[in-house]
Amino acid sequence: MKILLLAGGTSPERAVSWVTGRAVKTTLEDLGHEVTLLDPGPDLPVQLWQAKQSGYEFVWNGLHGGAGEDGTIQAMLDYIGLPYQGSGVTASALGMDKALSKQIFQANGILTPPYQLYRPGDPPLSWGSCVAALGSPLVLKPTGCGSTVGVSIVSQASDWDPAWELASSLGQPVLAEQYIPGAEVTVALLDGVVLPLIEIVPTHSSFYDYEAKYAPGGCRHLIPPRLPESVQHQAGQVSAQAYRALGCRGLARVDLRVDPQGTCWVLEVNTLPGMTPTSLCPDAAAAWGWTFADLVNAILTSALAAQRVPQSMPEHP
Figure (tube, rainbow, N blue to C red):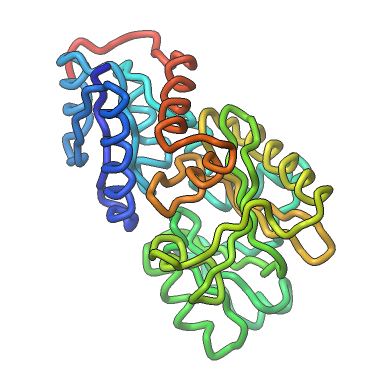
């Protein structure tokens, strides 16, 4: 199969996307496919249309953050008629917007940490008002980034201003979220099927930040988590509910906090999880007995079965 692989892009997660892209490209080629790596430019709609005319049959979206993950590129591909892996436009857009996804979770009875939302143009959120409403510590995060970009845990007033500056520097809405103590757990799902759960234990930082995610040895992935089986079962059920609530397809990953009482709180759903050597989904698949190639092939098979083909194909870009 002739596959166009998108990697790089312009989001803050560009470097991570390149690692994902190279790993997937090598594996797809080992599986017998012809793969071309493309770093999207401003003329991407034309590039995709030309790829379709040149006989490309599939697009593997290896982008992280920005237009690659928020439904924009998914909409282009739907319109042009090129199938791709992962969730469609709506689920991608909802998953990328942490505030909207939290509203969907709440509407479906899924526990998510209480929060306050700042939109550009609003008066900035203050330490005092947020603590009064949510308690301390607080988590500050931009609503539209992954890979923990711009995220801080704030425990005292003196740390609020630099954390606020970091979270708001990207020009996005900002969430001030109640910090949930306990275990960091992530749940990968493929077509709604729950893969082995992972507990994340950072080794060099106080939380699962960018360095912990991508630096070798930055964290430990514990499979199974150090949780009672009943709590693990609940985490899988809650994650599957969150996956369905956003309308996800293919591979997605649900991030949770499990508090000391065993209650599962959904933080977010990543509709386009990383596929780097330190990424979580490949580790979950390995615990299932799958190689990285098995996982890539399963994702591709899932996407082709979904048959996401638009009603019409444009004659020119």
